[in-house]
Length: 118
Image (cartoon, rainbow, N blue to C red; front, side, top):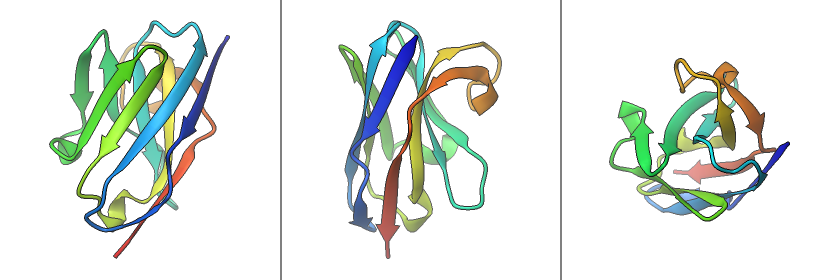
């Protein structure tokens, strides 16, 4: 059993920065990812980390950085835009295939809300 708990989401003005955290307990050694879900849209994978190796969706490269330390995964988000608003989730236990699809992940946190105002 794996438990994940996200935190750090809040309302921020465009151009600002936030760092999200995801605390894991249980089997914490596998690949982790951050997803986000904008209102009315499906949940999409945005960043992944596995043994220090990272991957990002192309649209976010350079603005977002995923990292991990001990049992916590972080998502540093810079130069935020209103389109970055949504609920951010972390996930672990990857089943293989396309990591950007939420169906490929087993365990999820409850999400943390990010609102970027213009």
